[in-house]
Length: 316
Image (cartoon, rainbow, N blue to C red; front, side, top):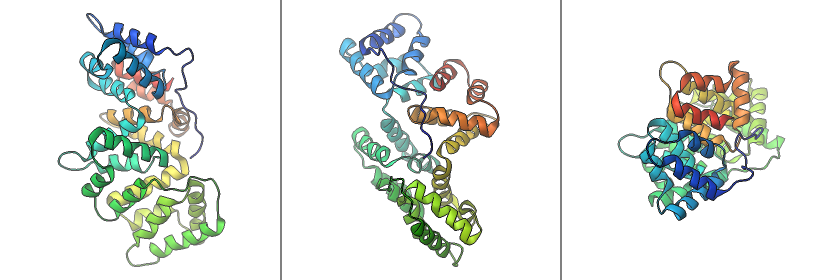
């Protein structure tokens, strides 16, 4: 999955009690001290924030979330609350909101389920059950259909080989399977694509895509574009993009969130909050490389106020 350089690391000299008291002071009396809130939330790891939450409740007998909810508003509030969740809880909430009520936000399902590791998916399934007393797989089943449903259910098994070994023979066989299931036949046999894309390790998939190009002279993304459509096409394409350049994929998503009129703040929050402890530093580098400007500059010019300050603090 490429290099892993986070922007948030363990805060040395961390003291949960001191942080809890500081946050209490920031929310007490007239006006809120947003600066202190940002400084703490954006400079502690998820585990450290959980300790602060617990300490806060112990000291003051109330939930830090509900206090921040009453003190903050808008996107700043959303981003702050996202940081108080564990990443798996935040993903679970996002998935629930994608499927709740009328209509389903398939793009959101794709962006989460097609980009997470086995461990992340398992943790999210558990969080989903704990938070909503519902089964994530059952909900996905009832909200989607066809081969799109099948690829998501396959990914929800969290059964991808996560090794780094490459079997060149298998890469050739898989390339042949994909060719025979796609370009070589009338109508696409999607189950072959599902098997390969949902179970092979990322190094193996890269070898398969390379073998495909050598054997059939076509890039696998072009094949997916011509052989599939709609949400299935988006899901397969996402897996290929993440396989080839995971950090580049997120850099492009961030750019898309800020391009043109209007900003997709929810996407900015989702990516920065969930990648800060994984590879956000590398995503910043990829962004700079792809767009010849810094992610910091882009976010500065596209967001404002305390929301902007919090996002920029996550990038530090």
